[in-house]
Length: 94
Image (cartoon, rainbow, N blue to C red):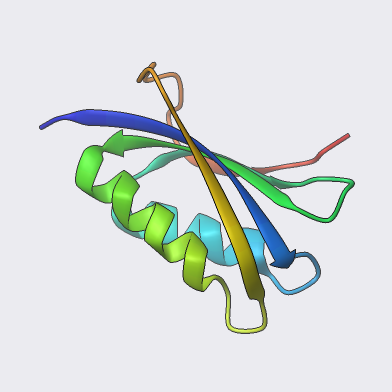
């Protein structure tokens, strides 16, 4: 299967609404590795790696978000696949 890596930035009401926790659950369900974190400017940032279909599914998930979120914009940047992660985690922005 083709492997893929994307770096995404999500804007809207995405902090304080369990967006990171739901992203982690979705990533683990899809078998995607990487991380997600809040940014000081109010956005959420994430990196997804894995099978291309699973990564694409996560990008689509980011547009929907958690039940309490309101996603206004999702910026996606494709990057070379690195296979650097063993799991998917929630990171601190500090």
